[in-house]
Image 1 (cartoon, rainbow, N blue to C red):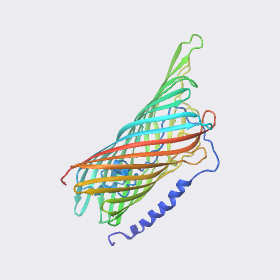
Image 2: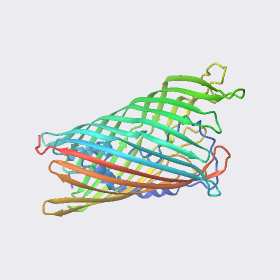
Image 3: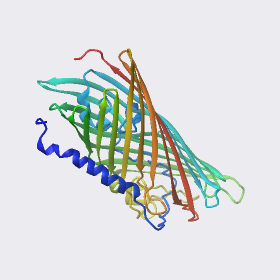
Image 4: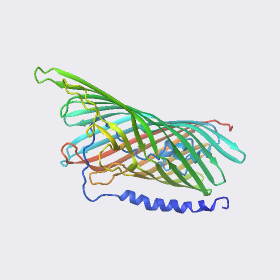
Length: 464
């Protein structure tokens, strides 16, 4: 294989060593003794990224049908979200749209087995959209793409049921990326690609908390971000049946703004009437650090209708930070509205997204494996996909280590003329111990999440 530079000939060995050494370490990291974290910040921020901590992962029903093991097999329009080098596989103009429907449940039980909290959420949102156009320059071929991806979605309705009350949180929006990308086949066996990503938008959230245990309150927040980062990728094929892929996503330091308002309802002890107080505050000098991430993968196609893939990715959530963050104190009756002040309401620096002071976040890792088998009979092509992955979390359990969740996926597709339809189902579970911030007792958390991805691709039948 003389067309492959000597420096790249060592790359498969490096990839194998990385997968073999880093993955077991990530899966077995546990601290031996309990180290209870301090209480969370107030309930104004009932948002977290459980089951979605792998920012290196992309989108698409075909990819997730294979467990997300797509870094070395990214050969459709969603390649920009996984490995932009895969855009070089496209030979026809394409229009792509992906929709996601997600559910997450977290049941917390006490040491006696009694239910302490049942946290359920459901959301549906656009996940990815793209316009892709192939081109060639001399003997070099490639494709250019303009794409949208909701990297972190906060589109959901959330209900937190406790024995004596029910809290409701409605969130809309997400951290979105508009990307301009391109992938090139520079030699027979080497493909490279990059995307320039503009992060924008954000979310708004409404929280309603009834009595008892606190004054009934209704709170609203609006959080917006803007910033830039870059994705770089390559795919090397030392043999026609084997692809080796690598991707690196730079970290993002984004400008952010946060606006909060709240209404609190006090019941008079004299005549039982309800006194309503308000408060509002905003800042536009926040900054947020979303971590960089990297991944390697291999994809083997022993037969034309069979593909087997394996990926390992790691995201540096230990570097996640938010600066100038604040919560909004309530206004007491007959008192002026207070402004957020340190140390209770204003925080120059906090880990993100845990928002827990003095507790280090954990780097996260994912090991993903998948298979695709295409049933071919006459003119029928029917793909059947399945996959599995481990999903390391960024937060600490009561034992001091970060929990690891596990997921199984299945998927299939259909080709009708120039249209490609794909669907995938993902089921993820995990369990860990946490500390009840009210009484300090141990809680058993059982997490179940499911996601359905539906993709539609229109592929223009003629090449440009």
